[in-house]
Image 1 (cartoon, rainbow, N blue to C red):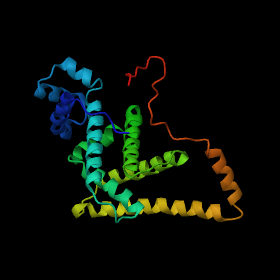
Image 2: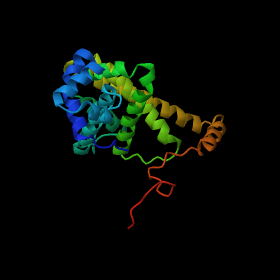
Image 3: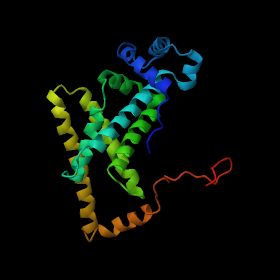
Length: 232
């Protein structure tokens, strides 16, 4: 599910804060400087960003997600294997980052205990967008496992990329390929377990238990108290 469009005033604040983030991080000092430069009323700025720079750091990540989706839409993936498509999507997400220091500072920000949940949600959201863009239609426990695995791949790839000094980030490409190859090895082991007469009954039992797990509904509930829907 795509994040909502960024408010134009909030978008202007994001553009303005980025040069300050390299020196001050995603902090109140950088946020106040951006507010002053844009010339927006500080009260209105806090209405748009109740948590100040933290909300702009989230908007920065979401802006990268939107750029990745645009690049994925324009890319020709027809000749790639599925695992290669996933690897390409991860790399396109990294290519969408136009300020490496802002990501470095954001990584430190969302490593803080009280913001770790926000960081995990952002990474999960990126993984969800990638799977949706690649046509994933799973509606069971695989919906969760795919996004959890890709979240781990993307998160580790970002950390590797931040320290990569090779031309064109070639080492990062190799790293992403290795991580996805590791995931494919796990899938092969799962298939072997299902094919083994000794372990197949256990696998089938686990599948029956997990069959109750369903992906979250993408259709908004419009018949709940307090909800309004225009008439056709």
